[in-house]
Image (cartoon, rainbow, N blue to C red; front, side):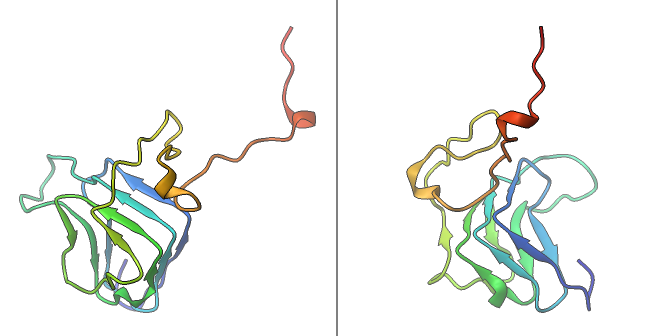
Length: 120
């Protein structure tokens, strides 16, 4: 995110990327979100991989954060977030199976039965 920008992220999961979030804006919010092992190697960046590089960490709340570097700038409030939580044990749809993650992170939307396609 660029300076002057604002992101609103809720109940999302970031995992398996080069880095998690790089946000130079202010007033962004990242709520009930999982940042887990965004440590993919390669590309032009030679530094350590990070979960959050955020100028204004006040909007990060209820999130679970774990990677090589959790909080690059030291702006995340540790009282309202969980750093270095246990393994979420993602299933194939990236839904965390660990009970500690109830209510946080991405959950696939299930279509109502009436909308499902029945195949012969």
